[in-house]
Every structure is written in C-alpha cells, then in structure tokens.
Length: 159
Ligand code: HEC
Ligand code: HEC
Ligand code: HEC
Ligand code: HEC
Figure 1 (cartoon, rainbow, N blue to C red):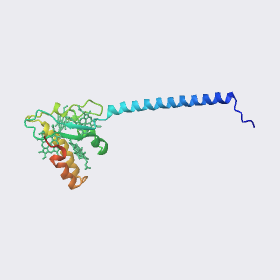
Figure 2 (figure 1 turned 90 degrees about the horizontal axis):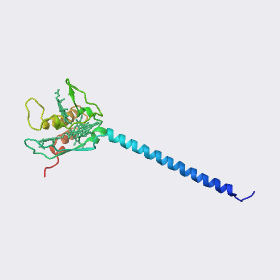
Figure 3 (figure 1 turned 90 degrees about the vertical axis):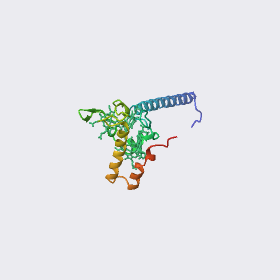
Figure 4 (figure 1 turned 135 degrees about the horizontal axis):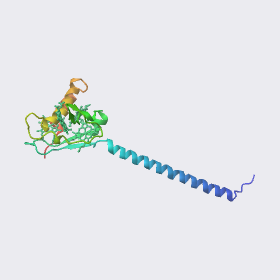
C-alpha cells in the first residue's frame, strides 16, 4: 500500500503528456489540411456569391446596376447553372459546370443588332422569363411575382 510514486511514474507521465501533445498536433495538422482542401474545392466549384451586373456600351444606359445573388439562386432556389450559362453548338447548349464562364456581353451586344438578341433583352428574357414561369406554374404568389417584375427589385437607383 505504498503511496510513493517512483521515478518510473514521472517518466511515464511525461511520456503520456508527450504522446498526447503529438496526437493533438497530428489532429490539428489533419484538420488544417482538410480545411485547405475544402476551401480550394469550394473556390473551384462555387460561383461568386453576388455578381454586380453593370455593363457599359448600351446606346442608352438609363438604369442602375443590378445586384444578382448567385448564391441564393444556386443554393437556395436550386437553379441549375445551365439555366443561365450556355455555349450553343448546333443549337444545343454544350456548356457544363467546370467550363470557363464568359460574360454575357461577349456574345450579346449592348447595341441593337438585327437578328440577334441584344444584351438588355438577353438579361431580361433570362431573368424575367424564369420568374414569369414560376408565377405561371403557381410556384410563387401573385404578390411575389409582382415584386419580381418591379424595376427596383433588380435595378438599384441610379445616382
Ligand atoms: C429580374 C431582374 C430585372 C428586372 C425586374 C428589370 N431588369 Fe432591367 N436589367 C436587368 C439586368 C440584369 C440588366 C443588365 C444590366 C447591365 O448590363 O448593366 C438590365 C438592363 C436594363 C437596361 C439596359 C441597361 C441600363 O442600365 O440602362 C434597361 C434600360 C433596363 N434594364 C430597364 C428596365 C426597366 C424599365 C425595368 C422595369 C420595367 C427593368 N429593367 C426591370 C434585370 C432586370
Ligand atoms: C439564375 C442565373 C444564373 C445561375 C443559375 C448561375 N449563374 Fe453564374 N452568372 C450569372 C450571371 C448573370 C453572371 C454575370 C455575367 C455577366 O456579368 O455578364 C454570372 C457569372 C458567373 C461567373 C463569373 C464570370 C465572370 O467573369 O465574372 C461564374 C464563374 C459563374 N457565373 C459560374 C456559375 C456556376 C458554376 C453556376 C452553377 C453552380 C452558375 N454560375 C449559376 C447567372 C447565373
Ligand atoms: C458563348 C456565347 C454566349 C454567351 C457567353 C451567352 N450567350 Fe446567350 N445566347 C448565345 C447564342 C448564340 C444564342 C442563340 C441560341 C439560339 O437561339 O439558338 C443565345 C441565346 C440566349 C437567350 C435566348 C434563349 C432562349 O431560350 O430564349 C437568352 C435569354 C440568353 N442567350 C441570355 C444569356 C445570358 C443572360 C448570358 C450570360 C449569363 C448569356 N446569354 C451568355 C450565345 C451566348
Ligand atoms: C431558372 C430560374 C431563374 C432565373 C433564370 C433567374 N431567377 Fe431570380 N429567382 C428565381 C427563384 C426561384 C427565386 C425565388 C422566388 C421566391 O421564392 O420568392 C428568384 C428570386 C429573385 C430575386 C428576389 C430575391 C433575391 O434573390 O434577391 C431577385 C432580385 C432575382 N431573382 C433576380 C434575378 C436576376 C437579376 C436574374 C437574371 C440575371 C434572375 N433572377 C434569374 C429563379 C430564377
């Protein structure tokens, strides 16, 4: 029934603490590498969370810029990228997630060009086309549909 703790005890205790520290350090390293990998991954697949659409070159630029929530549309409303991003080949959209994204202005001119969908109409058709469809299918209320049609819901006031 001796209460005396010999050298062995302290040596073992020290060893135990050392092992614990090692395990913690390892755990931390693992956690950090996990974090980095996931951040990098997120950087690859996630589009910018908010896009400010403010193109130049319109014949008449009357309205203020549009703040568009990419994140809400993708994550909350579950809208597929291909509803908005496209590259047409033989009349079919061949763009897929991971492909480079060109700005709409690269293909839709801000000036009116005969036989082409100009930039303003391209945006309006895309954005409002879908919102209108939601209303028609009864997926949003009449009140919400009305709100989504209002210029000021999308366009911020011009200064
Ligand atoms: C659902 C969103 C949405 C609504 C609602 C909307 N617009 Fe737009 N509109 C856009 C986007 C996006 C652009 C592209 C902005 C840019 O390129 O700078 C745009 C561009 C424009 C442009 C050309 C660029 C400029 O800044 O002048 C005009 C004019 C315009 N809208 C007028 C209107 C008017 C008038 C209304 C209301 C009757 C309206 N829009 C409602 C999304 C919307
Ligand atoms: C509801 C429409 C919509 C959806 C859904 C959408 N995007 Fe976008 N995205 C846009 C618009 C509009 C822009 C701005 C384009 C511009 O400025 O001409 C944009 C811009 C981008 C940009 C930046 C391009 C640049 O050069 O600034 C990337 C990258 C992108 N989108 C990727 C994606 C990916 C990946 C998805 C699916 C996970 C997605 N988008 C879903 C409409 C959408
Ligand atoms: C690489 C070129 C390219 C880019 C970038 C591009 N478009 Fe288009 N877009 C086209 C072409 C070409 C058509 C005509 C396709 C057809 O009618 O066969 C088209 C058609 C459309 C249409 C009509 C399609 C329909 O179903 O009614 C809308 C709306 C549209 N684009 C909006 C956008 C928006 C918004 C962006 C940016 C987020 C964008 N486009 C980016 C080339 C492009
Ligand atoms: C394919 C469908 C689709 C397209 C394309 C689309 N939206 Fe939407 N949008 C939605 C849905 C779904 C909601 C949520 C409606 C609700 O539940 O009230 C929404 C809501 C919104 C709202 C209100 C809430 C918020 O997110 O701030 C704004 C503003 C908006 N969209 C702007 C835009 C603009 C600008 C574009 C074009 C660049 C666009 N949308 C294109 C489906 C779409």
